[in-house]
Amino acid sequence: MTTAFCSTTDPVLESRADKLHSIPENFSLPLIALDIGMKRIGVAVCDRMAFSCRGVTCLHRKDQGWPQQFIKLVREYGSKGIVAGLPMNMDGSEGVQAADARAAVKELERFCKLPVLFQDERLSTWTAKERLYEQGLNEKKVKEKLDQTAAAVILEDFLFAHPELKA
Image 1 (cartoon, helix red, strand yellow):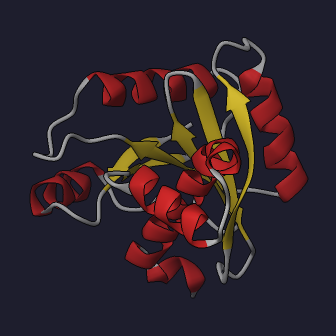
Image 2 (cartoon, helix red, strand yellow):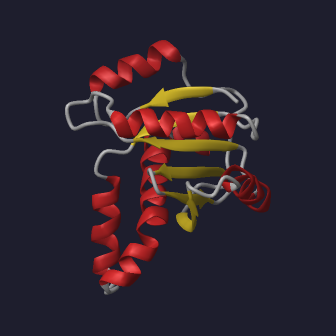
């Protein structure tokens, strides 16, 4: 599995992404995205034309079988690349949560050979929560859908930053 970094919000991080490499040649639609938390992992997918992104499920980190569950989702949706959210601090630095997300991707690499790109996920959970409350969902439903909706936000941000994938 190939890993790289991608950011749409911070020029310093963008230059770091350019130094690593751009999108690998084998990275194509449809994509699957992860919002990796310390307890849960939100999962979202986009369609083959990248017209829409939607949350599909939430996996539990404590379940040691989460990578195998994820692989089933990759097969089910025909995904050809993975976008993993990287929780950056507001100053652009990486903290404990970013290190944890990177560790989860390393764990996933043992089971899955798809290329992985990281996407800066700052404010994705806040955006997801705002969207869910705007839909009129109560607090319980928002909590149920939050991680997968945040994964969809991460995937939308990634696709917006990379229109060449839609060509």
